[in-house]
Amino acid sequence: MSESDESLFREVDEEVRQDQYKKIWDRYGNLLMAMAFAIVAGVGGVKGWQYYQQKQAESAAVVYADAVKKAADGKYDDAASALAAINHGGFAQLAELRKAGGLAQQGKRDEAVAAYDAFAANGAHDPAFIDMARIRAGYLLTDTLKPDELLTRLGPYDKDDQVWRHAAREIFGLSAWRTADYAMADRYMTALYNDPATPPAMRQRAQMMMQLLTPLLPKK
Image 1 (cartoon, helix red, strand yellow):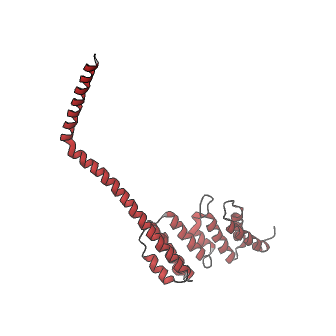
Image 2: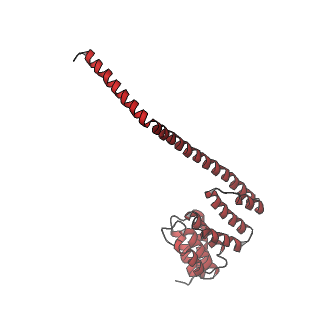
Image 3: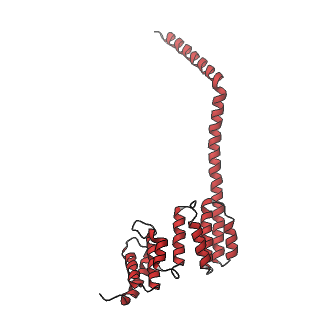
């Protein structure tokens, strides 16, 4: 086949393809345009929503930080008002926890515990925040509840695979110390001290408690 013949076949083939494309476009052009528009609009919508969420989170973070500063300055009512205005999901939950913490700072222990308990009872909240609320309530209750009552509240955290085990065991130990159950207090403080994952400050407190408990324990 000569080069001229090959050239002719290519031209004919190209014309056939163009004719097929035209037929396809005439039949489906509007649909293809609509699909392309939908894709572009969808991408734009996702990007717009992500930007909106980012701005909402940034705004909530600023309000939350300002509320924390107000609470640190003793302006609890102003802090509570600022926290109540936060409507961003994650920061709204932090705001609830912070409001409960503010009540505790003001010495309103019962109200703070009630706030933490109400937060923990809301199954829609983040599980990590729920755990935090229960632990914080536990610390507030070490001066009033007996060890067995605290065990009822926080017993599930007293396991070696639990993230909050250190805080829970410190709470049990402090309650046992208050009620003069020195053997139980020593058991929990020793467990804290021997756990390599115990935070340094908590380990130091456990060591101090062990030293205080030693002369109070039965002689071996």
